[in-house]
Image 1 (cartoon, rainbow, N blue to C red):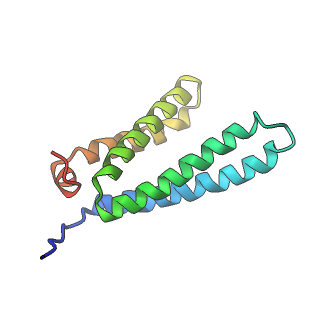
Image 2 (image 1 turned 180 degrees about the vertical axis):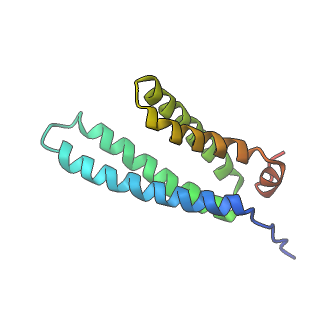
Length: 124
């Protein structure tokens, strides 16, 4: 059986690298948050667990993106949507710098819907 190699869009390579970096930052944040929250009690550890899950999800998504797996397209779309919503809430609460994160997530969402990217992930 002959395997057809799909040409990987440059934007996907860039998003994959950014997703790996984001995942590593989230894992580092979860570690330090765990250390700081440990004396406070188990309820305070929920934030650390959430950061850990997001970090692991980002690493897994980046692997799928690099391989061109369709599920990673869907999961990145969901993660970017939640990220955009979170940054929007930060902007509403007065953190104007969050507009950068909002714009990045919106660009990723827009890029995922480009025809060549959808074709790469076998999305119609």
